[in-house]
Image (tube, rainbow, N blue to C red; front, side, top):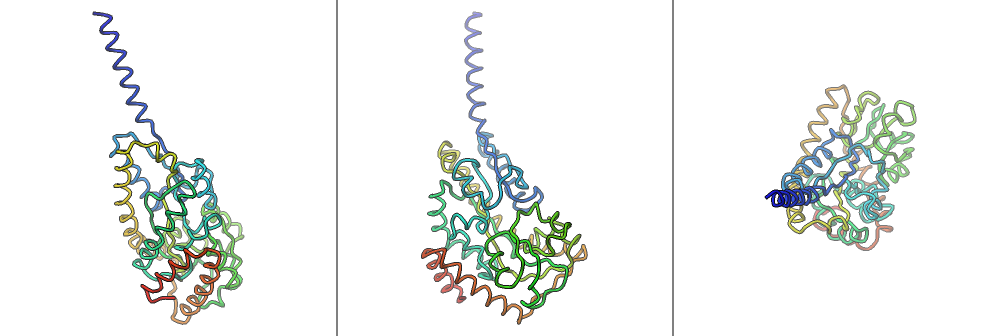
Length: 330
């Protein structure tokens, strides 16, 4: 009798250990922005839904604020090599490794949420092909509200941009700086505030949401919504790690990811409106862009896109041609 009880206890222990082993699938996830940012909050909702749907078998542990130590331009290779299993990858930050991915971060290419989504949908097949070469794929994407510029003085014409010391976050920002006489410096978001305080920067190019995250009103006075880019973030997972998941877990994750993409794209507009209100409540002046200034910016954007597409290649050119055909833009 005692022997039977002992055997039963051992079997229960082994079964319990097996369940624990299944529950130990853990993915550490790199996030670029603070925990309070709406992209990070979205990632938390995604992780929570995955954990619930899989009964705890897959646990995505978030590390916001680039706490894992990786910078934007490193992320594509970090996921490819398995240094990161899963990461939030801004398309415009990784063009050094894959220029075509910066398509959705080109200057003044879209003017509203419909055009943003259209451009990404047209780019999706090419993005998937490129990402497969980097041993990863996108679970879901999200989008930023259009970026403007934060300054200490009003900006009303292209000539007013000359001489600014501006933080940018991607190649588009650097190219825009070169074309307009801005001294552009690419740096991680976490380094912006100290650089402002030290006088190394006197302006930055980012969205209304990031302006709130940075409490821009503490060091800057004006926000000019030039709408240079509405960049896309990809929530990418390493293919080797993905292929180790059971098929039923993969199915559940993909279903959640599809819903998450729609949710995040719809959220961007609401976040922009709320963030602009917060900026104004804290004393920041939001200057409208005149028709003359907009025409100057559009001309600069067209010039920069032509230069970019030469290095991005034939796939980028085809996507742009189709996008221009549908929207009537050029």
